[in-house]
Image (cartoon, rainbow, N blue to C red; front, side):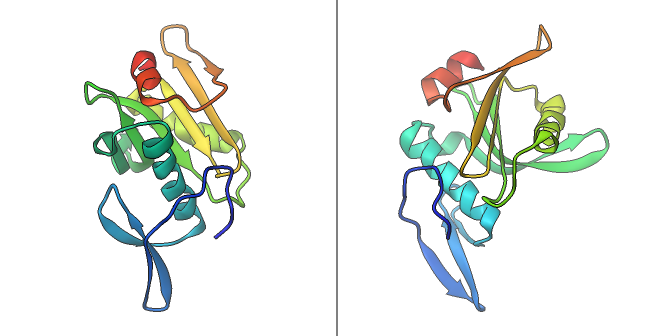
Length: 153
């Protein structure tokens, strides 16, 4: 798979029915290794190993309702209280992040009302802090570690 703008990690992979699968340590199962899944698995490792987010506070493909439609977040990080703190939207490395990506994650946040949003294609990462009271947002210079996430959420 393509090298990303993240540290390199070791992954468990296997071949099954002619397809490569990657082991998801959070869900404890193998998944077909698509370009988007490659970005998601690398971000999960980064959040756990480098940003010190406990694996038990990470949900993958968490279901939610947006108006009447069923949707799923790629990654949802909870704070120390178990409340949603950050939504992560992953795109394949070949996908350019644009306003549609931000509109998608903003729609998800209408339901969850978290304070942090992270969008990544593995090369470019945008993390922003949402101020719900003021109806504004600001971009952060880096992806926050767990203690900072808890303070901001």
